[in-house]
Length: 129
Image (tube, rainbow, N blue to C red; front, side):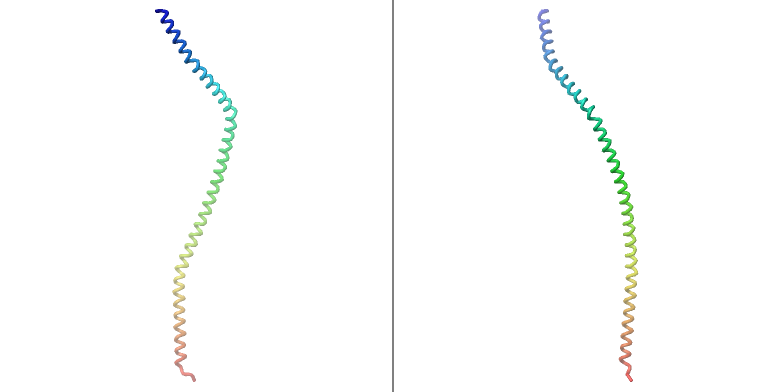
C-alpha cells in the first residue's frame, strides 16, 4: 500500500513537472521580450519626448499667431461694420431728404410750367401794335 502511495506521488510529480516546464519556458521567453522592449523604450523615449515637446511649442506658437490674427480680424470686421452703419445712415438720410428734394423740384417745375403757360397765353391774347 505504501508502494502504491509512493507511485501515485511519483506520477503526480512527473505530471506537475510536465506542466511546469512549458510554463516556465514561456515565462522566460516573455521576460526576455519585456527586457528587449524596455531597452528599446529607454533608447527611443527621450527622442520621442523631445519631439513631443517641440511639437507642443510649435502648436503654442501657432495658437498665439491665430489669436493675433483673430484679434486683427475682429478689429477689421468691427471697422467694416461701422462703415456699413454709416453708409446705412447716409442712405436713410438721402432717401428722406431725396424724397423732399424731389417733391420740391417737382413743385418748382410745375410752378415754372404754369408761369410759362400763363405768360404764353397772355402774350397770345394781347394785341400787337
